[in-house]
Length: 121
Image (tube, rainbow, N blue to C red; front, side, top):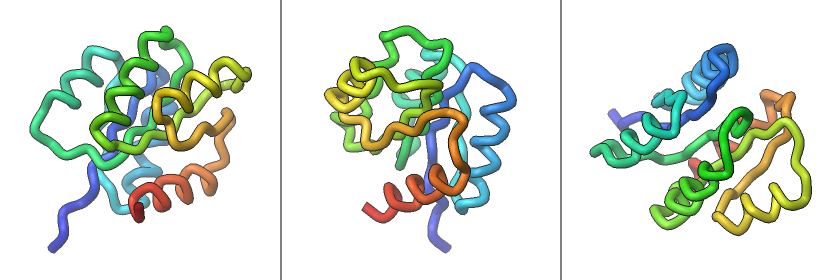
């Protein structure tokens, strides 16, 4: 039996974490949930092979973009969920290797399709 893909999920909002974890599970993946940059870093330093990262940027500082750069260097596709996407945020995300930016409220079908597309690459 093939191992499930591991998806790193970051959000400070407990309800969003629950919704994202459920969505990831519905896609046949395992969600590795993190609520702080420290937890996020610990998962990335671990032995598990992260396939995708889903990052809810609300409530985080610009320091999070460094992590996006690291994900890109490790060839881990990432999708950023943001309440709004001003041009400077979009440029920063793209320059750090983010593959998809979805504005909140995120359409579940769009996020599921994004995750499926990243898993196929």
